[in-house]
Image 1: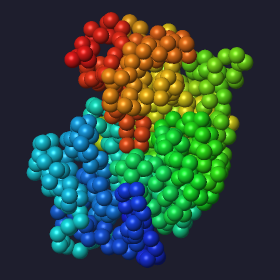
Image 2: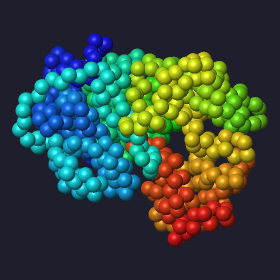
Image 3: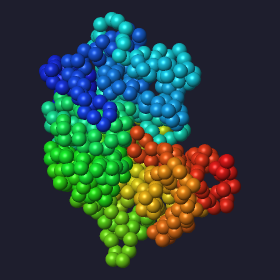
Image 4: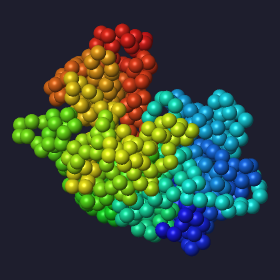
Length: 579
């Protein structure tokens, strides 16, 4: 697993060494368990070569190829075909009916100008129309499952520095940014994951995460293939409708390593019934990764207590931290804090200070995200670039082989983000934009630099505000909190209601309860509370709340609330809200 120079070399070696081993085990959608689809390494390699030959014959080597698939099988073939052909894969979400998904795809198309788009036969007409609406109607949209005959595949001249794919970050309504990931970046991060999570060749890994997202692509598709193992994949839509199916897949198909963002574990706790839990055997789940959004110790504790009778062990949890700009993993491992986390003084945390709890004062519990995985992690003062000692909170900076080359066709932002230099002259660091601290070598993530709400000189972490609001009413679904600038920054809360019927709910009373709760908990006056319909709060494919996008929508008057309470000047500045 260390001699290969590109991921293409890895796949060619795997298909030659064990052609009949299961590469993919694809579980069907729905609540029942029909026979899964099995794809061997031989079959995956043969399909990828055929499509790669077609791409080469159409001049795709070195060019961008857009991937718009709902089929996990076709996505895997198309992605590997791009690597085989020397093309640059550009995974993108295949629509979904929501306007912001279409906007995001359009932004990716304009940014990359793909030479071809690969999709599923059922999606081809819709994707062709979308390309035309983006001004790229001349771009060929090919159903990857009906590839025309082409010249035989020829191994391309690849090097470790060859670009493998562009990973577009989600969460912004502005110009999308494509992270440029090389073969060297990909292989370095695979080695880091292997060492941090102690993954084993020949085992089954997998989950339900979408493959156009870095956590699903790198962690649940490419890592099993790199190991020579089997990727067991469940449709994301199935998990959303039936969370128990994820746990049943772990049980039924012997998945030893699987992971998801924090919200997914919470969803299992709240929606898996007692009868369903009693029928599970999770004793073979050796590593349960929690990553992709802030890890809540309470979620880990609740999940462990809920499924301990099913054989789930607390030591299976591995809280991790990573981001697309570092390919995926930055820190993780199995030496994290206990599942109740590390308690710190909440008021000190608001001033970016790490202090032990004081009796009688509020505390916050933070989960350890393990130690650095194949990279160098520093905590840096974002204003002075001074490297901070252990126990101090600052911006997380990362340097290592897994850190990507930069942003696609954005040299200015690449320099600012990927070529940071500390005050003592050490260069080549990635500025993550995340806040955290190191303690005994372990990384604790405390918040997001650009999401931090500064009120009266205090730093409020939006995830703390959001969790507090969630406790106000059982009617509340997902929500978000962000700061709105002005003469003084104010807290605005956008909170979904679980029910679509508002006539029998006292919305004014709910908004008042939110304001009172936040005033009592954080000693701040809330500038605005918007109660909204389900589906209003945007989330990324991994479950992260898109706070910056929600702030932008609020400032542009693009949120349509069921009820709102706003400061007078905010009401004037957001007059469109009342329309």
